[in-house]
Length: 134
Length: 134
DNA sequence: GCTGATCATCAGTCATCCTGACGATCAGTC
DNA sequence: GACTGATCGTCAGGATGACTGATGATCAGC
Image (tube, rainbow over all chains, first blue to last red; front, side, top):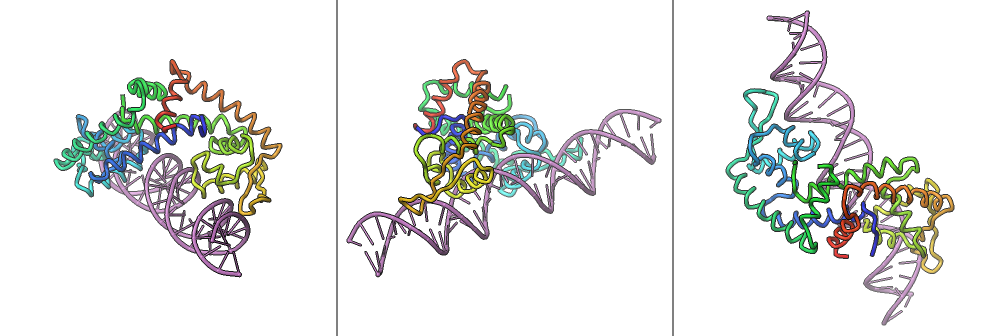
């Protein structure tokens, strides 16, 4: 029922997911955005703030606030890059690594459950990626 | 590339759609939300503000502002219900009807184009509805 | 007529996103 | 070596959307 408008559907599916994620990640003191930042920082070589922002397609000013929060909770550290002293290299603390790994498992399980009503959840994901032009 | 997080994908697909809709509907002086309200009002029997809000799953206070905007542009009218004088019945003006019908065609064409990269866009829509539990 | 519920509205909060400006720093050029 | 333009991180501020709580008007049931 309700509406078959694409915007309506996407918006409320996203809202559902966001709420479910917030609840599932609350014990870790994170939300979905925080976890996304941790994930970007955790994956491989050290990144500057701008690089993190680019990976997550987040605004350059927003990423600063996000990292602020994570730094205050002791999950990441900013380090001035020695090669280019304009850049803040963001790295996980050991506490951040632990939190990330456990929260990441929660996220994966939650997404699996969230997509459970679908016959082919991989295809759904692939569709979303197609719509992003990736 | 980028991220395969569900939240990321949904959020940015929605952002793309919202931007495309805003651009396509700009000549009509509407955005996607306005059009959704017009659509709810246009479909059948007269609705109170709360009923419109419920259909669109929009907050009760937000719908008031939305209708304010549409009323100022002369697209809808509030009428105090005669049966229940607490309720504001919202109806389209003739101008509103014209705008709605033409904007609605734009939206449908835009959604068709937007989903064109997919092999089976109906299935994608159905998936979204499934995830909303409808 | 009284009580509790409902509708619309208002004020205010909160989170997200974005713009524009700034100082610090870098790279390239003369 | 000094100058120019670009880049990185930061800050202040604005715009938007979502929500809470309170209020007045109105209704329904007793």
